[in-house]
Image 1 (spheres, one colour):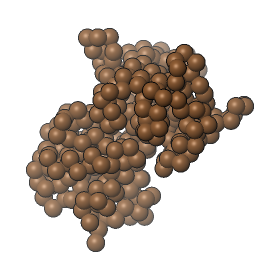
Image 2 (spheres, helix red, strand yellow; image 1 turned 45 degrees about the horizontal axis):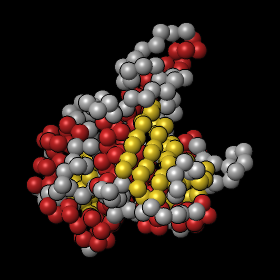
Image 3 (tube, helix red, strand yellow; image 1 turned 135 degrees about the vertical axis):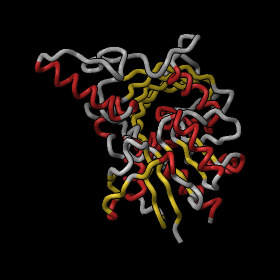
Length: 338
């Protein structure tokens, strides 16, 4: 019968990826509306075989009759309009950070905690986790089920697309500028991003962690297990698309390298490419445009009694945002709206 869908923030990097993902997966749509700020209203965005859709003004849109809203307009905008959409009867799948730690809003990765989805009924809002959290908990879930994770130490290598189109443009312009001897202009990043790495994503908090690091720590506990201890260092790198993570995991009981590989290979959405030779691993460049979460370099961590270290890569715009949101919508329809 199809569903009436609205996409908030449709002109942004994630919003466009949501539209691509909906089209590619053949989502059962009766009608689709694309929404953005008044500045973008009237512009066109592509949507599969339909062609182009005209962007409508979010501020004046009536959500009555909409079944599902896929929201990626930024935290402040979502804080205002997602509750309005929910109050009008729509179920909102929100890709911003605003609702993630609300106790009345489920935080969902479909392969990890689908049983929590029913909690949406409290506020009609479902939160999509942080992009770096999604790929990490996707991999940690089968390992936690096997060995019970005590502690996680993660360092991220995050693409500039996590900061949106302007951040991608800044990397491009700075890189080009270096070769033609133009001055470096910093607007999105606190330091030069071209040919550099920046250990600073989002704002600093009182304890010295950045908010991006805090998100990974608290979201992992909410999604997976509040007993897991997590420490994170989040770094922006001069890559356009694709987040990578070096993860060390300490367990309560032994999980061998061979067992970990077997568990991960049998987990939906995970691809293990782990050959101890040149090119026997996946990099962000190869993960861009792919739906899978890739795992490489699985090995024993000799610093603890029961530990493993892994390299995890995923397309942050797809699995880290758009795909996860669409998968939530598919699960919602299958288990709650059918």
